[in-house]
Image 1 (cartoon, rainbow, N blue to C red):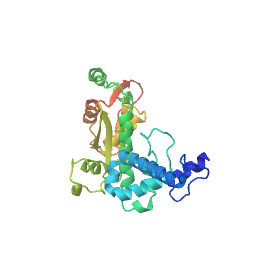
Image 2: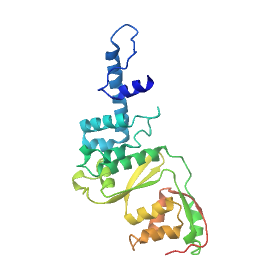
Image 3: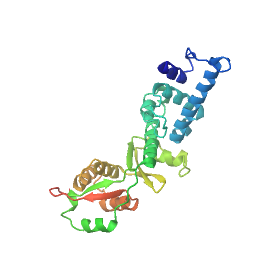
Length: 257
């Protein structure tokens, strides 16, 4: 009964589950239809709150239809809807009606990263003085490992996802965005505000390597493999200014490229 009820609740094509009774003897099918509409609308609104730029890009009607199909394929598993939509980007990538917007799935990935950043744990940023002392010794640099803030993420795409996001915040003119331009977005919470900024591909490779646990020397190597002009000093300064580095450890035996 519970499985049948849940399935019918998300599928308007299914009939009212058998066995339902209304307290006043009214038609349970009509009451169930109202309840189903409310549930679908609430879940659709929750998705819209998590993916507002996706919704703006496709329009209200298209988003509502797409969201309803997603709800039927991937109903929520928890009453807490803060993270509902984990599989939405993958769903969009395989959704035929969205094929003309090849950047849409990656925009969804970026917006989900913002949600995760907002709800990530708090950690105090690293004191720059202690890091400056370690950085002053060139022999220690290659083996340094950094712990990054839990809210931090990078999202890379073959499309201009950071610029699209910025345009929908009023920071750019949408007409100026070339969606075919590959971009990488840095997501980081600053206080209670989640910030999104565009970074270069070498910066993206560097941060991804650090996040994977690579020591500084290996991370720099990953960045230089993409761009010989990678600037370690400015990238570290940017991460420190944003509170993205929370801890560092020293290891020997690594070499700086």
